[in-house]
Image (cartoon, rainbow, N blue to C red; front, top):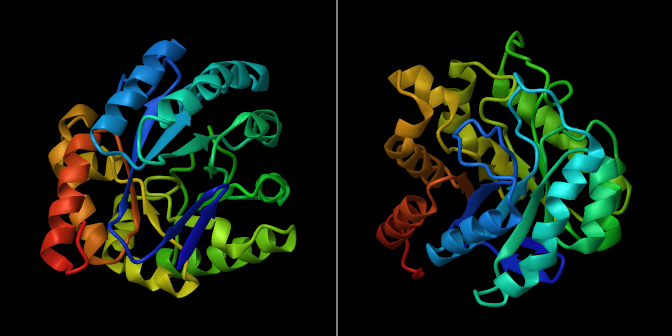
Length: 282
């Protein structure tokens, strides 16, 4: 299985990739965001030093209890980071840059300036974002959700979350390919916590292998998630140990990427589990 994202071509099976989170905003739910691009670049540098394979930058928090920022503000937050990224990336071993945004106007403006893949939390309701990625040979991470981002969807109920995901990804892959985005450029994210209840999230961890039929890399955004708080009753900043448990569960069921805040711990967890379970090396 191949993942193509601009000049990057990654072949699986291999050790799972760790995606570090850099929030270029002031309302991250973990309180680790910054509006200062210099500080954001410093965070990215630290994560790369700790072994991150991908840096995921986002200028707008996905929190539904915060107003959405304007398109122009989102662009203005992203561009200074993108301008400095090539210099930073050149010091490390071919890291990927992911841009966490869902609005087509933002993607059209920033993707020509850099970034290897778009992390789209909108659920791809239309083909615009896939078409923009196709034009730049960028990767596209399609996340399952329901309804528009920044709007709470805690009321959503499913007869079967895995049947829902199966149908959803089947449709979205067809949609993305219909506008010229090769399947090799697509990753899938089941959307832990997005329009899902505790039992839905736990079912996804338990039955993730069902999604391997699409033969696309699977990303699990496991870090400090609400489902951990639901199970353990602990606040976000105390969830790193449980995050490692979620990584272990995901690796056992074949996840290829993990999106995390604590890169150092995640890289150690992934490398140790891979060494135990694999004879192919790190």
